Amino acid sequence: MTEAARVWARVAMLSFGGPAGQIAVMHRIIVDEKKWVPESRFLHALNYCMLLPGPEGQQLATYIGWLMHRTLGGLIAGGLFILPGVVAIMALSVIYALWGNVGIVAALFFGLKAAVLAIVIEAVVRIGKRGLKSQPMRFLAAMSFVAIFFFAVPFPIIILAAALIGFIGASRGDPAFAAVGHGAAHEDGESLLGNETPAHALPSAKRALQVSLIWLALWLVPVAAILLAVGSENVFSQIAVFFSKMAVVTFGGAYAVLAYVAQQAVETYEWLTPGEMLNGLGMAETTPGPLIMVLQFVGFMAAFRSPGELPPLLAGVLGGLLATWVTFAPCFLWIFLGAPYIEKVRQHRALSGALAAITAAVVGVVLNLAIWFAIHTIFRKTVAFDRYGSSFDAPMLASVDFWSLALSVVAAVAIFRFRVGMLATLAGSCLAGIGLFLLGAI
Image (cartoon, rainbow, N blue to C red; front, top):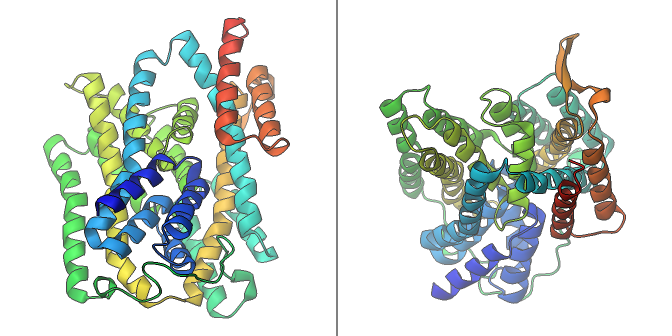
């Protein structure tokens, strides 16, 4: 188990670049280098994690850790996967809260936002190439975008509707809803686990009940205790309830999660501004661990600005950790409860169709996120449009921020034309922001 812990710590420290990068690192170390599981088992576990709400990278680590070394292995793998991000995002949140308005720090984040916008656009293209293989999938993506951007249809409804459409389509044998591949599967070679099912991975009703009771208590008892202690209007209660709901309904990966969080945390709760949301995403992009760690930043800023009788920094730290706990505790529940049944059913056409449809819908949702970010990054002012049953923020063209637009275009050219890596693009944009500040341009 000591060797396993070292391996998962290594995976965690190298897990930059979002789900695609994290899964690639995990595949290289777990499948190719260590040969713990064969390719088919790795992809089977990944397909299940893609169907779950929450970060698929962390859930995949938990799944494989559990498959190899029981519950303790899952806890170590899943816990170590998020630990570097927890520490890094907390440190950056403190710096941002204390010195974010200092000129040079603000300039750094000014450049960071431009790069993040380009990265989100690149995510739309990447997911679109993978998921929009047929006309029905492209139509589903377009309808998802229209629903969430123009009519503010809740994100969970869009994803659940897409899953239902995909489930029915695949059940009827429609090839348009064939499962989306996550990589080129090759013939399985020798591996430590092989294709057999370990005894601890066999389904058991007694075990399922025990897992449900333990993890539901670990997740929801703290939420109930906070509600009883401080009331539903307190910021800690709002954080606990909001991120618990998010943990249940946010299918489709980190960028899709951000669309839902931005809609609620920025517009409903007013915990932070759209620009600050971009800054938080930039922090998550440049640190190891899941991109969804940006939610810790959101929880930190929410409590920091409404600390009650607590010192603001202490409140922020507690708010960030609370958001992290209620976000990730359910992830362990989904794996420890569902994985034995997924191991039993290696192929399921209808579930694969639901996954393919969710992937298509996520393209539309992430496109909504990209446009939402663009409007609030490039334009200083917006005007509410509320006609014909639709409601959205339209940019005021006269309020364009030239330097934000220029940096965003340069970052996009670097990524799309010259294939510059994400970290290099982020670093370059931050330096450009600082340079503009020193020149007095911003």
